[in-house]
Image (cartoon, rainbow over all chains, first blue to last red; front, top):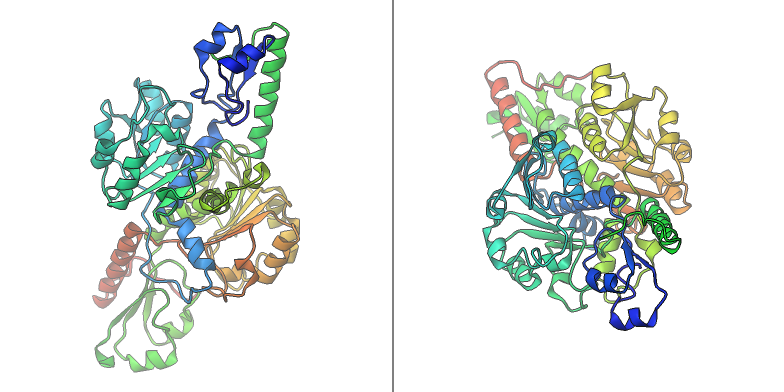
Length: 271
Length: 282
């Protein structure tokens, strides 16, 4: 299964009586009805860990590109109309700023490790607090209430799974709690954010900018307001899109399939 | 008016400091530069008029290191290309058009390991990159170990092994066109060149040729010769090039800190005290 295709539903499963295993690419499994698959005796696997560094890198790439206005800057540098570079054209400093990570799993933690090297202050919100040693290693401070994180962060990065609890986790209320100088970065799933509320917040300068590797749907309709906002960077869900990682993902998926077909324990099985 | 001027705060190389200007300002005591690079100043000429010079080294290092990393990441993950795909009317693309380079385990070669180069090494280490560096002098062992950096006494050795080559040197007669045809050909065909130093450190024509023929994979340039480039310059049209308008220190915080440093130097000079960051002609 690659990029959530084909869609797995009752009709498909009924038409494939000998289906033994579904190997899904990447770590997210929100597009799969695990109960349904289980009821047909089909095993499911994903590729959870190999994607972590690339996805964390993508989060940092978006954070840096947004704060330092790399995309806008490039456009200015190559535009036929540019005569000189304005002296007062400024971005936002990353070093020493506060990063709030929502979702401190494997990927969120790797983002924290990277951000620490930029001398950033790190806050995090997670279902559970991490161990003290893990927190100290990256200098991360736990925010039991997401509101505290939102109010203090210069950059808010979403690295949660999509579940019924995280659906529209960031809506109008959360955006209004954020600083007007803050940037929202999303490397989780489009549905974690109330997209209409985000558009409004960006248009009314409730927050400063957004950088999104994920949207809902993917891709967005071509007339969607997010595509036209100057303070938005959008990338086509490429969190794990590097040659090296894609190669390993395919190897892992093939391995899981072979095990499933041989009746052996399936590596990276999702239960 | 000329007789009243005792200090100049140079912002983005303006005003141009030449003999005429210096002669018209007999009471000038100090020129404070915004930023760290001094290649636009004739240090000997200024000193011959008894005028002190200062730069702002402390304020720039983090912001410039951040810019280097921003360009490294933007190039590795093809950020400008994929953003344009995402907002394009057709949004048709092949998987191969969006695949980037994995940083964990890749090798970064830093040419110029001063304060800025070192901060880049600290950042790159957190991305699990292997770090090589080339510098006029070798750093202390503890400094190398803290970032896991290996010294390359010969620049060729760094160029041959690096997946990303980052230029962080000052512009001097020795570093002028440091990276030319020979150096580009030593680099891997899968390698990326990132320049946050000065445009003149790179032989720009050789770079264009190398990018057009696949001698190297890509380039990300915060600095060029001149700035901005002429609008018909080939670098502006290459898909595998990101150019930014000398962003190095262009942040709210850095601008503030640079001005503070400049003011400190100016006040010291006017009081006849030692300057915190004086620059002497070498």
